[in-house]
Image 1: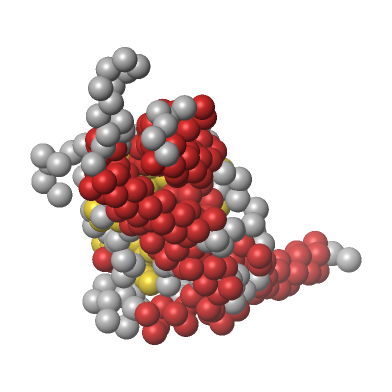
Image 2: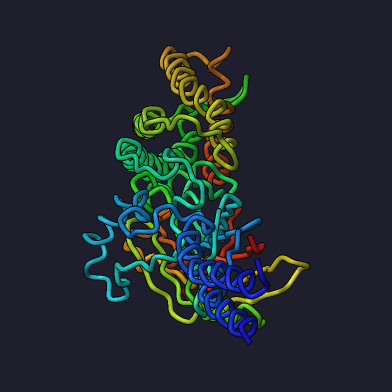
Length: 180
Length: 252
């Protein structure tokens, strides 16, 4: 009887420890690609320099992915410098994306995340952005597109030959995560 | 020591351990999460400048998020970026702003320069004496000569002003040049000397014609040098714009 009571007490005592355990994720590989279009140009800038971490606890996941603005390369150093200038990338050298979504979505093929994007000294919120999830062994690959625009971050649209780029600057995300 | 005593001792020890477990787990959670800056103030330490700008800069943004941050959210510090990477650099931003401003003027003047340059190429043959040895030489009118010279001077003035804005735009240290800009700059080694040489040869040709001589010697290369210069100049504009994907027909 005493042993049974002890076992129950032990379980009750240990329960909060299990309940509070957070699962953590680390970004192991990523490709962030922004797309810019103008009447004469289609440009993509790629960064592989993002770092990220995710914490899931109490049924909620909080993920953070950040990359230096200057790490995006469009294949033209002159254009990249103009991009940094236009997006105030020296004043605000990081672009950071915070994602929140229910923990159970980690097991589903589509994750709908609420995103806060800090970029160019502004923060924009995007609700319910779908990301595709694909398991690769013990890693998880997340792909999706961030529907960002220039006006979200209040920077003037760069122009070339007198023609401004379009307001839409979608950012494609391809990130592989590993549990820590 | 009887069995009852042993069981009681084990029971007390287990109970103590069981009661300690939640405290231990709470104490260990932040450490195991490697979130040393679990307090909002600490966790936002690296981002403070951005956060301040967010408050001032995005006050009118309807989609601006609430500034609160739950303790279990990862922070920029957790990601391991160096301070150099995350720190703002107003001096560099000012330099980039000045660079862009100067290069925009460079671009605008460069495009304007195309007009007198093309006009000069068109009026070039009109300013040239025509006729071969043994035939009647047709002298160009002074109007043709003056127009060609005036267009040439305008082209040269605009060209060198354009070049000034490119050459004296601030250089950003540590940037390795890649892409179309390399070709754009390489072509300057053709049209640059060409733009120096063309007016000199033009002046020599003009003087020879004024002296009643047929244009001869190096001055006779004036037209060819001007043509090569204009082609290199045009290629330079195309190079910096390359690759061009025309999509005027698409709805923007």
